[in-house]
Length: 294
Image (tube, rainbow, N blue to C red):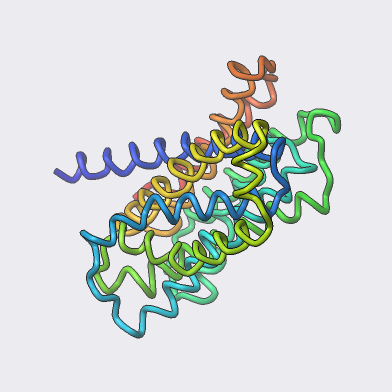
């Protein structure tokens, strides 16, 4: 039974990594039709519309003391990152955005220990360091041209991972202790941001342009996939995984994301895989295994 439980956890981990690995590709495609703030707002609004009908089935009252934490976790986990990633990817390549995303477990561990009283073992620190070293290996084996690297915009991507790390800890320690269903947590995470995103899109003429501009309609197709699967569905599974395991384990999805980013580059964009990238993947996976060793 325990082995089957752990297998499900790992399957969710890999599935999430795949969905979020493809997300960077869809963000890039969306940026061909919309400005960064529109891409972020559309992603949030589409996810909000996807999850809203589930309120009919999941309307258990959230304890008052958990409402503020749920709103804060929603802002940090669902509101700010889509916008930060959109701006970041205007000057940072898809693969590099995925690689920088691997800093999430580092921040999840740091915030967990410093602010949430999380007890950590030596292997978790070692695993995070090894995983981060694997990401660094991938970065160092690519040229500046390949990276399309601008430190200022890369900082926005890292800031998004800071938000993810804090959000995961808030959910685990302040919200999920009240036995709230993961779908309901996901819904309320977007309830606070979805209407704001929709209002922005409405007042800035984005919906009108989608109705009239064929290029915007093409971009919307990519963002629909991003908003539904890469955001709404993925956020539910992330919350579920966090509830089943820990904020640190759930955040290790980010160590697997570059694998799928490279696969997209190889089979979709016809890019070649370098030996340094393959070595980096092995190092990253080693870190994941060590950090989660009992």
